[in-house]
Each structure stands twice: as structure tokens, then as C-alpha cells.
Picture 1 (cartoon, rainbow, N blue to C red):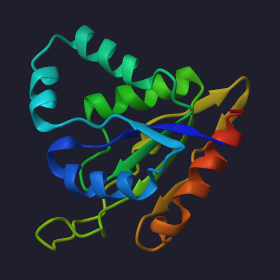
Picture 2: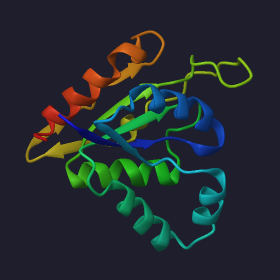
Picture 3: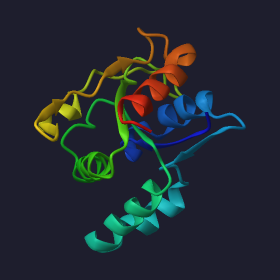
Length: 158
């Protein structure tokens, strides 16, 4: 089934890693939102909070899954939190992927950050929802991310 996923990540620190992770998943029947060039991000981040929220909400339209790419300082960031909350409210399936062991364009890895989902208690009705988190390197994300996204979509009933 064709999937349209939103990728949430810390632009400043993780753009290169995130672009490579996302790129490994894209095919003719898969699309991604949440990616844009640095000029676009510079333009968006200068706007008022309400404008940034509206822009994020627009990026989430038509998506069924949100993938939170977790770097060293992703957890607790204002716009990451907003993307997670908006995705949950929308009913998207969600998952996290640690990308700290993925080498950047200079061959460096990073330190493992906190799980951003730990900052929330998610509920669907009376049931508490725990979103799965994987490790890109340790859990072979290159070969498994498609399955993880599909599982998250199915868990959300999408």
C-alpha cells in the first residue's frame, strides 16, 4: 500500500542523517513530508508560532504515519513536541528511530538522545498507547523501516 509519512527531526543537528534515512525509504509508492531545504526552513522559522503551527499542520495533511528521527537533542524541542502532539491528535501511526549511530557527512556519529515520547502520555480512549522506538543501525533500519512504518500505520488503523 502507498504510504505518505511525515518525518520529524531536529533540522540543525540532524538534517544530513535524516535526509539519508528518509531517502532509503522513498520509492515510487512512498512519499515523505517534513523535508525542505535550508532556505525554506530559515524562512519558516522566522514566522510567528501560529504560522509555524499552520505550516506543520499542512505538512501533516495526507500522512498516515509520523516517523520521529531521534538525534542527540531531539527530545523536548518545541517544534518536535508540536509535531508529535499534532500527529497523535490527527491519529497518525507513530514510531521513533534513533539515528545517533548513523554517520554524518563528515563520518561522525553522535551521542544517544532521550526518547521524545517519554515526555508524553498518549491515550486512545481509556487505553495508554506506547509508540515503538528502533535503532537505525542496531535494528537494521535500511532493511526494516518499511515494515516499521507499515506496522505503525496498521496499529493506527490506517
